[in-house]
Length: 121
Length: 417
Image 1 (cartoon, chains in turn blue, purple):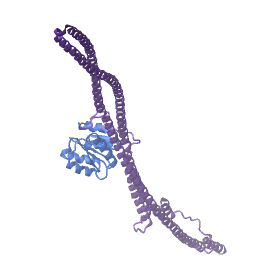
Image 2 (tube, helix red, strand yellow):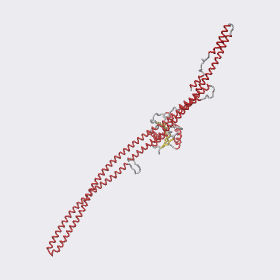
Image 3 (tube, helix red, strand yellow):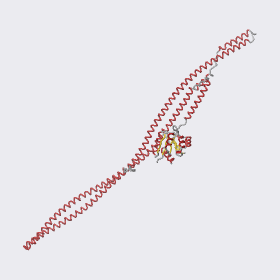
């Protein structure tokens, strides 16, 4: 049974590239265009990993992480931030919200797979 | 704007007092001269000339003050009129500029969105092209490996290597069968040769039989002669001698028939031997030729298979290279997301500039809230100006942070908490 990953980003191209990379490695990937859509999908299905952008219209990535951590299914689920923000202040906010890791765009597909494999154990 | 306000504020303080006219000094001078003259003419006239002089100066001073007041009011009204005209023109200019900037900002936003849409569309197609390219490269590698026989194609299907191996096995079986046939033919030929030799012995023996029959015939003739000499006593012996001679003649004829039969058989055997010799020679040559051809074919097959394997390996390397290039392209193609965010931030900055300009334009157009007093109106405008500047500063601060810190398309950092 393939591990399931929820990819969240308001950029369609990023979603395409993340899906292409992860599906090529055998993962099952679901896509969401913003935080609210991600919450809806996360409530309907238990994902093994959430990979989310930070700056999104409506609900941003930090808020999404905070809300997911309040959900019983996602208390210990790895949540990675994939964003263009590289400042320490933002990283500190992400860490405080409960994010597992911080990846700065653009991502290298091989290294993204390496991090995903690592956090999924 | 500030200049206009300053002009208005300073308009009441900058008019000149140097315009006091000389005719106003004429009455007191006349009164003074008249007083001095009366005092000289009538030395005992007392204080009246002095009082008259003072009164004249007082009236002149009053007239002078009223004249200055009137001039000041007229100048104030003229300056105020000019300031109002300037204010109206400035307001019109601000209104015009505000409209123009709003229109320009709108165009910038539209063109910004247009660029983002074009980028998104192009990147979408590029991503599909690259992902399709990698899939095709992978399939090409699979097909090449299958062609080289390194992987099974499916149920009961093998690659070129297996196919060629089966053909080689079949050819090898044919060559071995041909070699076996050649050996058997040679053995048969040897047996025919031995049989032919045996027939020659039989013919030799038949010659001896004929000689014996001829001698028997001669003896029978001699016996008949002797029986004739014996007369009546030898008549029986003559009959026997005749029978013996007949037997020898029949024996000769039988020997001839046997000899003829044996000769035909020997002739047939020789023909068979000749055929077998030819067959053996041709079989040997054909077998050697087939062996050589098969060896050559095997060599070519091995060479071809080796080339196919090398090609498959090359294709495999190329597929890996394509995969590497596609991954690099995936990294680079993320520039669309980065540039979209940068362009979005540019839009935000433009919107901020528009909002700031709007604040300033509103300030220029702001009324003094119905206050009749000029100072109160100015104070209200100053307060509105301050509020507008604070709002503008807040908007500018909000637009300060750029969401994209990358300066190139080098991969970003990774940090696990």
